[in-house]
Picture (cartoon, rainbow, N blue to C red):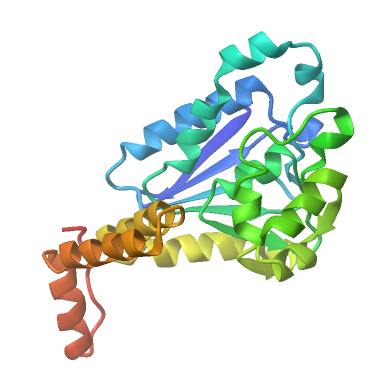
Length: 256
């Protein structure tokens, strides 16, 4: 079977599932290339509204494939340009929900942090243990983690390689929602279905402004927000949403 499976329960939702259970969904070059190609294809799908990215009940992704990493040198690592592969996930134009069970370590945690929302089971384990094998996070682990949880917690996790529990991760702001292990996927799918019913241009603008504004000065980020709001006032979905509210009925959004 393929290392990455794609399911479409509806036109609006895609489920992207890592499928290397024999190595706890470790991320070798092949699976990263496959993920990138899938997300590039999804980015061009105008019917898509939300993506659920997941693994299996035992592991979201247990990190990079050490057997693969052990055999390559710096020049081959450079020529892989894996940053382009990761970008395909992070730049997906619709919301991406990571549904995390089991291990999300190293590159697995970095992959989850490329999503917009992380839903994790209480038994999940998260960490950036790269230092224990002589390297360091290389797909945003030092940067996205710092932005998510702050300098001192990120330093502790990256410098010690400590693996933390999902409740600890939730407390520090690394997880969006903490649920029972057997409810992770269903919770993520229900959230995706709820997002899919919302006005897609508004959803896209919210995602874009949050991401673009995060590294901008506050004044510039607020300007981005104002311009996005102004654009939405030209949409048919704005008129429909407000009319439905005033008429006490459910709105029908068309993405126009």
